[in-house]
Length: 64
Image (tube, rainbow, N blue to C red; front, side):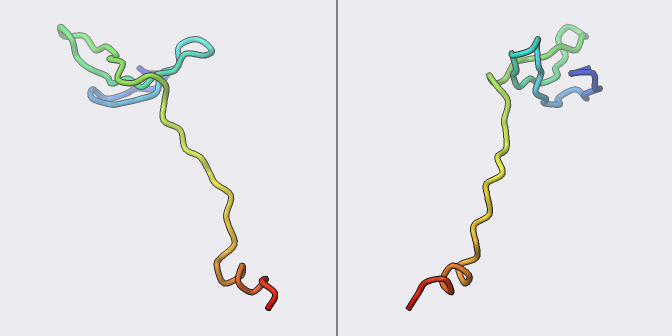
């Protein structure tokens, strides 16, 4: 289980340890037991960028 959820062997998740430590880990089998192997520090994130107006709208606002 990773962060309270069942993860299949080979699955990759972001594990949070305590209040500040996070890392990317893969569920692996080692000596007939499942364990987590750290594969990267931190976790990937996504950003939502603000939308820019379409080029046609921007062009119509140029005086001329």
